[in-house]
Length: 445
Image 1: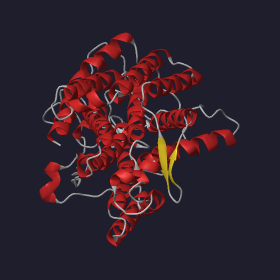
Image 2: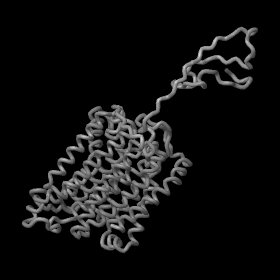
Image 3: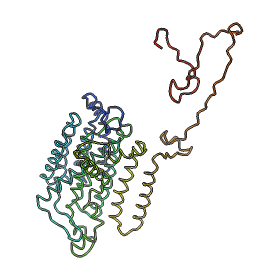
Image 4: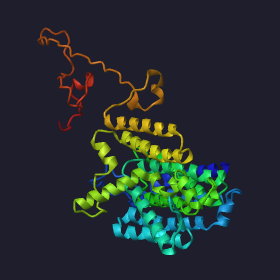
């Protein structure tokens, strides 16, 4: 665990430190597209954040290769090299898309080629444990098609959900954390060496997202772009592929009996193996709904719109930050709920906790305009929007009678005319809004 944490921290540090220079590079090269109809930000923001994330990936793999306990992953398996090859290709296509806006079909073809590159180097699904049937060996063609389909679906699911500041990076980080705990349990708890590459990939993916999030939280200073969203989607898919079909049911030796009985009885344990997409259930649901919605309206499935889940949260009244936190909540609930159920499937407490948390999430969805307020003693530790607002002191205008010039003792140096309290702002009050601005001579009124 210490080596995994070291790899995670180094990856996060490199990604964080490189994001600032990458932002300046994106501004210098003009990688700041104009605001589109579906965008929610108000001013052009540089992209190409995936450059820093890719170098974070390379650094994480390099550090892991020089660690004693993780060096065996590179010696016994070719999967890290396969991941790096596919990631480099999809990252290059993403960088070109962030700069030149490539066609959707070109990106789809690049995603399939990247998946094929990983399959050629051994990162593929070999067999599947199916409940009630047992372990089903896949032919080379079946494994290739299933691997390519999983990679393409995961990449596009992450790409579709990348619509709000910090949303995609945070959700993928949550999914990677849940997957890391599961893979580490198989590797360390059961001594299954085939789970070590997936554990390493998940740790590096967490570091990439954590290092990029400080720059991407609302208001974002830089976007990851397609170079980042497709990259983290491919790594998440590679983690699932690395462990799905690579672990035999008999190796676990959880239950006695035939392989069919063991697989059927160990169904909760194999949930993340059979259905790795449950880790990113929210992005995948958004992807399916988007395809159905666009096809139903006679549009291309790749046509952009404002009908995604995060857009709907904004439409019903949630703020930007609240919409992101709600998506985080549901992603964590599904991912860690699946993880907990796979470990202790007979415990009813897990089901009760999931039900209670789901009810809390529904309440948050139904109260979009409710803003919690922190107590007085905790106001200095929370953002300003959660602090209690002080009531402004409104000064009533004083009515003064103007005496004739002959009766007044002092002649005012300058006559000041009261101005309604809306000239300097809709809510402007006080002395500044009661009088006209003093302009220099010759300035237009």
